[in-house]
Length: 183
Image (cartoon, rainbow, N blue to C red):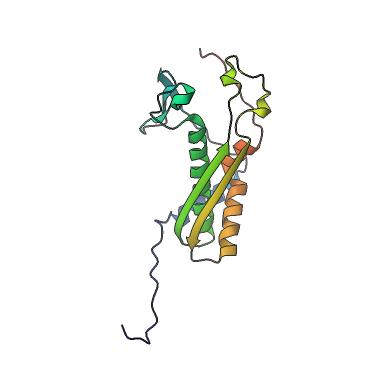
C-alpha cells in the first residue's frame, strides 16, 4: 500500500432478520392491535432449589441458587434468569427497530445489573416486607451498539425498543397475577 492511499475500514454486520417478514408482522399488529399470544413454561423441581423449565421443544432452562442461599450453584439464579430474559427481549427489540429503520448493526451487547435483596427469606420467616419492597428495586442496562447510523440514531433505536419491549414493560407495570393449586 502506498503512503498516499487511504486506509479502508471493513465492517462485518450481525446476521440480519427478515425485514419483509417483520413488516408483515407489524401490519398484522396494526390491523389487530388487541391481539395476544400466550407463552407457556413447565417447571419441574429436581431437588433443593434446582429447577428445569421446559419451553416448547427446547433444552430446559436450568435455574439454581448460589451456595450462600442454600442452592448448589449449578446454574443461574432466578433473578439472573429474569435479567437474561430482559436482555434478550431488549436485544430482539433493538434488532427489530434497527431493521425497520434499515440500519445494519455490526455490534450489539447489553450489560444488565439489578439490585435485589431477600430479607424476607422467600417468606419463610424472614423480615416482614410488602410486595412492592421485594424483588428488583433498580435495574440498569448499558447498551453497546454499533452500526451504519449516527450515535443519535442508534440511541433513538435503543430508546424506541425499550419503550415497546414486552419484558421491560412487564417489569415496569403491574400485571394481574394468579397462583393456585393445579387440578
